[in-house]
Amino acid sequence: MRNTLMPLSLALLLAIGAPLAAQETTTEEAPAAGAAEFDMGTPLTTDQLEPGQPYVAAEFGDWSLRCANNPDGADLCTLYQLLMDQDGNSVAEIGLIPLPAGGGAAAGATIVAPMETLLTANVTLSIDGGQARSFPFTFCSARPTSPMLSSGCISRIGFTAADIAQFKTGSAAKLIIVPAAAPDQQVELTVSLSGFTAAIDAAVAGSTTE
Image (cartoon, rainbow, N blue to C red; front, top):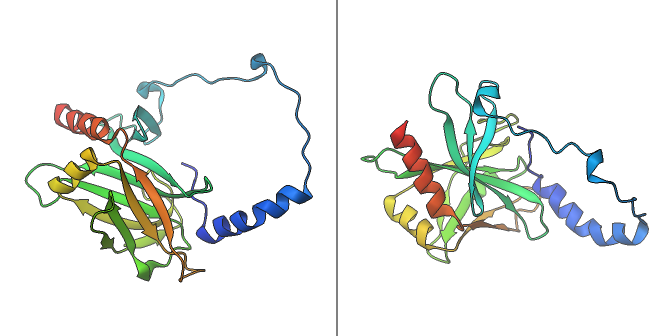
C-alpha cells in the first residue's frame, strides 16, 4: 500500500505557502471529458486477489473494514480511519481490532504518525473531551508494518471494554501529536466515531464465525 501520510513539517509548509501560491499561479480550465474516456475499474473478488493483498471489505460511516487476503484461512481485518488536519492533509492513521474476551484489553489499536513526529511527546487521546491519556511510540519504520496501514511512527495501544463503550456512544475522539520540527506546537486530529458501533460489531461477528 502506498504511504498516504504527509510529513508534519511538509504539511505546515504547505499550509503557509498555499495563499502565496494561489496568487502567483494561474490555472486554465481543462475541457470536460466524456465518461467514456475513463475506465472505472472492475471490482475484484477475494479469489482474484494476490496473497496478502489488501482490500476494503465494507464501510461503516467514517470507518472502513480493511482486510488482507489470506488464501489459506481467515483474512486479517482491521477497522481503519485516515486522519486529516484542518486543511485536509493526510496526517495519521488508526487501525483497530477487537481482541478475544478474557484479556485485559477488549481491543487493540495501532496509530501511525508521520516520521517527523516528536516521539518523546507521545501521542495523546481523549474521547468527547474526557480525560486524556498518553501513549508512547514503539518504533518508526520506513516500510509499512501491515498491509492495511502506511509507514511511519507506531504507537500500539489497548482499549478496555469501558473505552469501547465510550467509542460506541461518543461522537469523536481527539488525537494529539507533536511535530519534531516545531516541538512547541501540537497537531490535533479528530477521530470520527460515526459508524464505529456497526464497524466493530461486524468485525467481532466476523472473527467469531470464521
